Length: 106
Image (cartoon, rainbow, N blue to C red; front, side):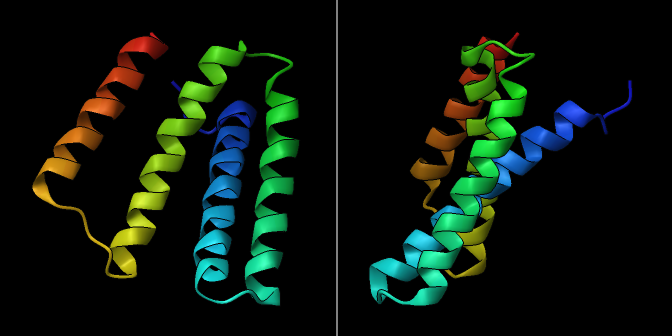
């Protein structure tokens, strides 16, 4: 099975777009400035364009489950990098959410 398909690249682009927008939100939450706003706009534009293309071939429910799972992993990785780690119960909850997404996606 080839994992690098146009659909998987678009899913990654949508998830990355939302993750970049989240970084912009984090920056803007501490101080409103052009960098945070630029990341917000860039992230949401990328995510929107990728989702529009994906909606032509995927059901809305499946699409959002896949994007949420990928985005969650990216944002959690970013949180870890900036020193906002998760506690044990938070990690367990996240694993349960991602397991639920995997079950619903099939």
